[in-house]
Length: 164
Picture 1 (cartoon, rainbow, N blue to C red):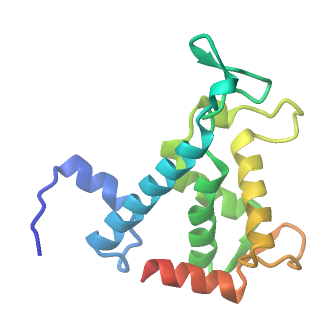
Picture 2 (cartoon, rainbow, N blue to C red; picture 1 turned 90 degrees about the horizontal axis):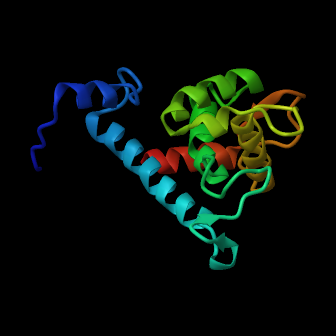
């Protein structure tokens, strides 16, 4: 087994991702690397296509330039992990509060802006869309009471499989 030396500040940052008394350093590094891989996959899907590029920059709309917000796919693991850690279900606002803490390092100013419709903050809206996708894929229940997000058996298994 290789020995890796890291600085104190890096160690402190890694501990923020650990579940106390549960995660080993290897578990934490795996989580961080999984998120980094997910981020790279998401970024590759959000780069502007050549026909959208004008001059030196991407075409813009009121939605903002592509790649300006955290991609929807990046919310999947934090949502599933959070629900698993909460015993499989939680009130939407509580779930989103934990998801925000887990993803805060990815969010920029654009993610914290109010949507043009005025309905919600952009990152919360994106998380809700990812929740809908998870429901359609059978990982979250579609018949939970209003305002409750809940894992299905398939969702629990997906988290447990990912954790190893």
